[in-house]
Image 1 (spheres, rainbow, N blue to C red):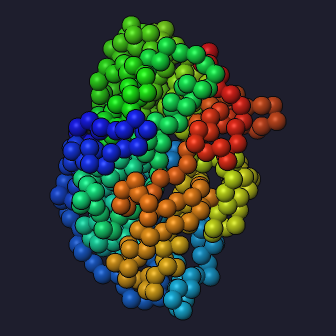
Image 2 (cartoon, rainbow, N blue to C red; image 1 turned 45 degrees about the vertical axis):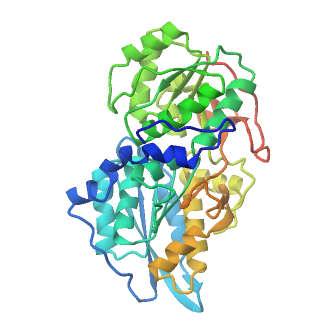
Image 3 (cartoon, rainbow, N blue to C red; image 1 turned 120 degrees about the vertical axis):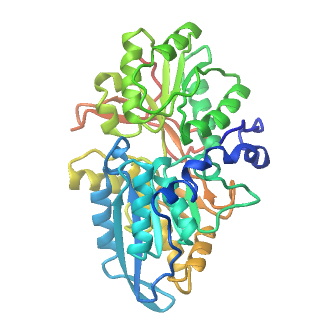
Length: 442
């Protein structure tokens, strides 16, 4: 997005006011941009055999590699779940999942999408985690008329960042995740009701990328309307290695709240420099990093006390429609199988396949791409990540999902891991239980 979003005071986005700046970030991710550089996408028809081919793209390496940590476990579990195939419209189909690594790179993401569409002749694309991976893959699918479902990107960065408007939505690409309204509600609830008093001055680090642009244009005005003073030194470039100017601005303004949407390496650099230069906010709520145990562990004790939005945890009171496991059972199974700590990507990526199967089963012919895309747009179900409803907006092609706020703390003596998140604010989702109260950063 490239122009401010005007939003009502209740935090719900105004669709018409938002679309004024919708096309600003579309160029990099448009079919005429990245895809041309990759040699283009050939429109192709689904094969008419009895095999459903699902493409799956995720960042397994590169700066966003943490989001790919659960993939080996998840894909093994899903392939087991699909071993007997799916019965749809009275016909039995076997299921093949072709997974690819985006390497956290938009060009690579577009290239692997091309391979899956033209080479593997997939019937359905699933893609997850960060605009750098999700947007170019979704663009490739829209251009080739291949149904695509994605998650783990704020929906405005996915929708407006790719050039859609309510008058001109997508036809083949669909997405579920939280958006600015959900982030705003979660942050303001935590910052005002969490038990930590502040001066309501928020130092922000919003980068010059699709996430940063969406958040600056959407979240910034909403926070201002909610009585917070935004201290914004301006958009920075991904890969910046000196944040002295930003730190000086936050210190001068006495910003007692800090918020950022950075790539993990950028935040590590900033946070270490901030402590060295004496910037110590009372609350630090971050996104895009600080979401996974490995990202917090990389910071050592500097990661203790950071807060972040959680779109899934073992405490979510939901069950997978594919495996029959509760959120807690899924997390326990992951830890026992991998000897790694659960992370919230497990829930959203499992839900990705839950919605996919729901839509496939809703068709009379899952090989009919137009029918399958329409089924995605009509999907309404409760997944292990919570209730999803593509029929109720906030815009066509999008469903939102629950999000609560958690705080990272040193794990208790009974845990075999170093850190653990505690749910400290459940905002509009009281069904998700609290685990404690917000504590000030030390």
